[in-house]
Image (cartoon, rainbow, N blue to C red; front, top):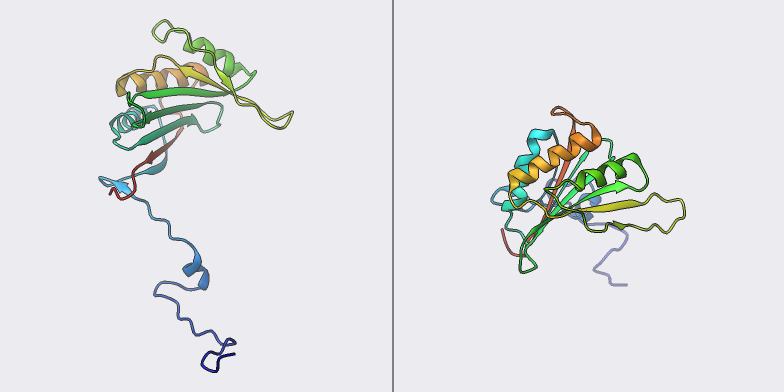
Length: 183
């Protein structure tokens, strides 16, 4: 053992603002922003907030952006994604709904409206456990190309499928993936 180092004494001073060693070891989470807007955000709102989130998604310059909207009880989830990875850079949407319930029937009926066209076959997520709940992904085809139209689709979806109204609580999650080194 070196006589210059006493391994039984800790001579580490904590940096300013740290009250315990855990504060030094814990990774700092910094919310990176694009033009002052957080890349990941969770919010609670109502029907009137759907349009602003849709405008944000459609206007995103990120490589990929995702907007999740659902009622606070989690019955269904409206999942909208935009991607700059492909050549088209389009926006796509699906409605996630539990298999076999009343909501599945109502969502499928809603998605067969003439202006939406007949939905393509949906996918089911298969669980590893026999009695695990299965979620059906019902594609919204074609997805509206304008934020206002997409927002109205969301309002109509939650009104018709969940029986929500203008004051009902909705949960929003917005996520973006940007290139490293971008502000």
